[in-house]
Image (cartoon, rainbow, N blue to C red):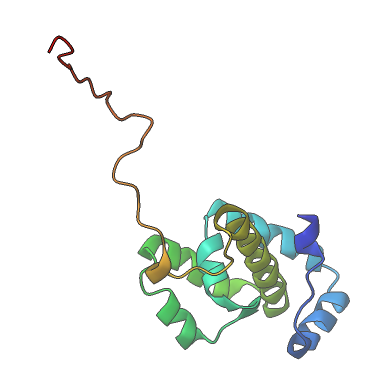
Length: 139
């Protein structure tokens, strides 16, 4: 988490940084909404709603999230509608960096789109039944 906390908002969001510095309840709200994101498991949809840690406009988010399950989308909409904008921008940056760092660690590439996702394996190799072959060595 230390690396994530070092991330800084983009220059065009300077007013969100100023609002956060002036808001006495900023840290409490940040913690509450952070917990909500983890409870509802909306890290990936939130990361997909960003470009380089900055939230995309709603139309572009809708295109990126068209294959997202409806339950996740309802939780994400709740977050977008009720979270204060300065808290939302800080959380979007943190979650975006966190998810991308984890993806780099696992796959070697920080970018992911449904079209480039690896297919699910057909069957787990651990539970594959053993193959027994009888060979006739008496020939």
